[in-house]
Length: 86
Image: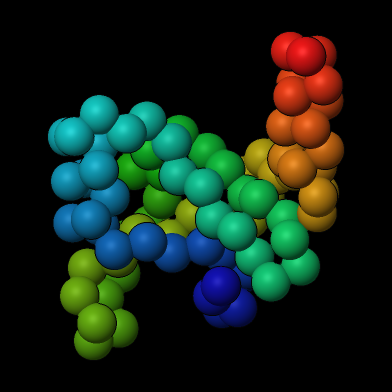
């Protein structure tokens, strides 16, 4: 996570565009606290800011533009579906 100029997630621009070209439609970032941050690739590319700090072209998007699941929510949701199918 970038701290400056504001808390943001950053992704390699080339890898993001490659994933989109191969059919991916969203970015998911799993943080150390167990949260899953997500947004569409199209939104990330449209609203993100490009920068290069010496590691290649990247795109950053402030965390305020992401949706997120609290820790363990995804695991509980999968368990719910597993129980419903039995």
